[in-house]
Image 1: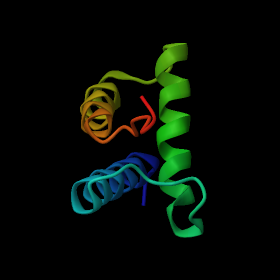
Image 2: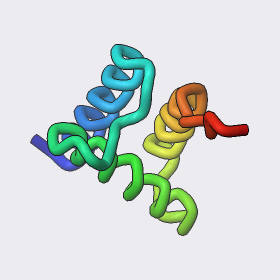
Image 3: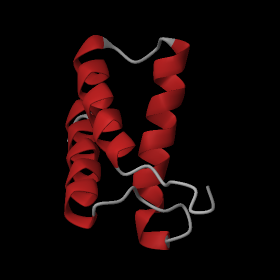
Image 4: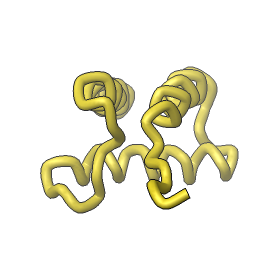
Length: 76
């Protein structure tokens, strides 16, 4: 399996998780840590300008999906 195939596989896992659970992965749940790490590392690379075009477009779509389920402060 090449690095690109692994990236696409992890990307699909994150998107499926968000769509199925209607929430973002939690850094506290051990089974969701890899998904959180994927998103965090992707944001870091994107902000540094190191995420290349085919992945950049896909990653931005995933971030838009994750923004829909961003946690809101319940005390406001």
